[in-house]
Length: 183
Image (cartoon, rainbow, N blue to C red; front, side, top):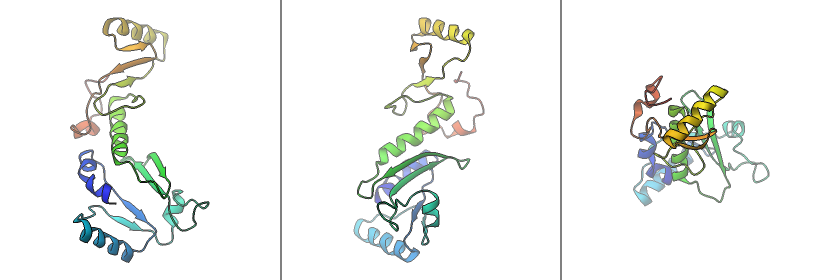
């Protein structure tokens, strides 16, 4: 909770809302949020749902019965603005989450969506994205011609371009139905 709180501004800049879920009671949440504040000066800036029955946690597969029937494993769900789960990260109880990786995933999803492209392995924000492979022979010939002219890829099926927009800076990205920089 402390790490997410420290990164809250970064998530906000990506137009992303944080939400916590715990099978502890609301009173427990208030006690440990207050304790965190007293000991660190950090206020938890996002809501935490008290799921006392574990109903939500079970529906989302957050309780690993082989580990515990009452403790949740450490999950991260990235859910888009249409309510679709785009990414699920599951961490064991004794392993902390990697906030920079979660931020990178959010930005990768937004960039790939905005650019109508894919991000390659080890992609970092502002790096080139992968152009979708052609689906006709005519488009394949165009791709080869572009590679010869622009040196923008390794083969007809692996070409790169600069992302059309940077969601971290350009929140208009989601509003664009068609980006003029995209193919």
